[in-house]
Length: 347
Image (cartoon, rainbow, N blue to C red; front, side):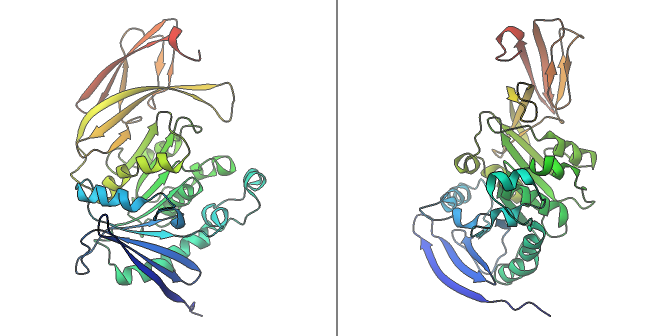
């Protein structure tokens, strides 16, 4: 039996600072806020982003993402987009977590892992309704989330590669059920992926990047990972770097490298307290102002000893030398970094 949908338009508000509009709807059991860009034209199509935690995105008591989007569009940093905020209404764990995890239930309360049902509703209920009013451009369609919502958006990108052309995840909770997400199959059709993490949060997320590369993805073209030095698990941090995946999604001005900054990181392991990841993190800035980490894409060449080691992901191990001289190269960019063992906060 076909599911009966209830649709209610709640209100329309016009934001005076950028002439962008936020429209609110209820469809079935889901409340939605829809951002329309400045100078919205119903006769053209727009890339569409479906975003989790919709009640936190727009308005004065939230992330105020509409101000960010107005600025990015006005400065031509990104192409105009439509963004759909999907309210979770107290069901974050149910909606966003695909796996049963006793640790999550103990720390965040009992839940039913309904990410599969929620994602299906996004695809089969919300998407047809929204895109009946706001058609996509060449199926340019992204799903976006943070934390548990980032776990869901990455999972949805793997499960619905024919629906979502890009998956965007800020500080995704890949750790659920002992990193079960890393065991998910990478589909043949290539949804583009963006995911990031702050070094003040928890473990690095390069295993997923490795899985994508092994499946034929190309870093800097259709998969992007960013490690943010001292980044916190907080919406202000996520908002600060939201422009980067939106640039990749709208393919604004290509992906030509401009500069490289080499960050040295010392990240305590969450699984093995007292053990630290020592890493070289080459952060690439493109001419279109996008940033991403080039680990697994950069070359690391030790210049002063053969007794030490730098892995493809940038982790380094000292041998007998007190200093490690490493040349980091990505495409036409090169940088030399000298690491002094005595100056490391953790040896």
